[in-house]
Image (cartoon, rainbow, N blue to C red):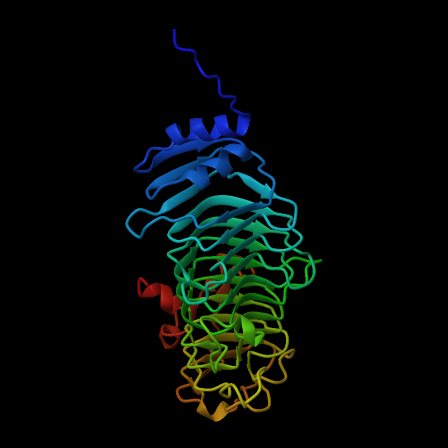
Length: 394
């Protein structure tokens, strides 16, 4: 009679053994309802796997590395019920993704982290960016509340998208990008909160280029609603040190309420701000700044500010804040509509504007809400502001 060999199996090994059978080799769907199940499902996921996360509280501190979907078959982590998303809350960071590719996060909620809400990076492999990352319908709130702590922190991403997300209360940036390229941020909301430092809604720096920021809503989203550039330590530029902080970024069809300035061009080259609606900034309409030395970086230059609708009042005394070592004369300012609500005061600009439109009341509706839009049907205004962008069917 052959003696049977008994091999002890601990609980963790048993769970891994079971999960290996639960996850089909060629992807498929799996449901999880606790932290252990989620960790195991993500680490065992194959291209094409969709992980449905049931409603509930999942804590924080999830760090996933080298999770590899494909362009044709991404790995998807999503709330099982979009109306009741799973909550990741507390701790320093809710979720940290390193050196992952073609991974989709959808229908999740992140709250009350003391550092970043979600952190996604290239794992320090600067020459091989993290590709095909998607962040869709995610709520990130109450991050920080003070200091350089971001809702969504991205370092070294390529071909990524962020859509339909809501950011409410953060320390540094709602979205912070370092060395990212070929991405889109679309249809998101950035809502500032009292008690949070909120320096900017979106920041794109460290050699970031070819990003489209479109159709978003910013309400008191920091001192700078969008920071096109910044001031990055040279060692953090990706894929290596560039002579610009940001290049070829397009800001189009967005709506801004409040902030010191809606947009700042900072050590940036060739960035475009077009067909946005800007309402009641506190100090400036936009800024042109140089925050890196000229011996290594180009002067901030070649920006475009065109076809925007701007509503302002006496709080704006300097329309465009121009810093030293910049080249404002290389900027193009054209076709904007300017309305001063408490006087008839035309803007003083660093270069002569062509085709400017003055003092036609836009009759804005829903100011300060996500439904804010232009009420005026005056044909002269049909080509300006966020409404013009949306009217073209995008």
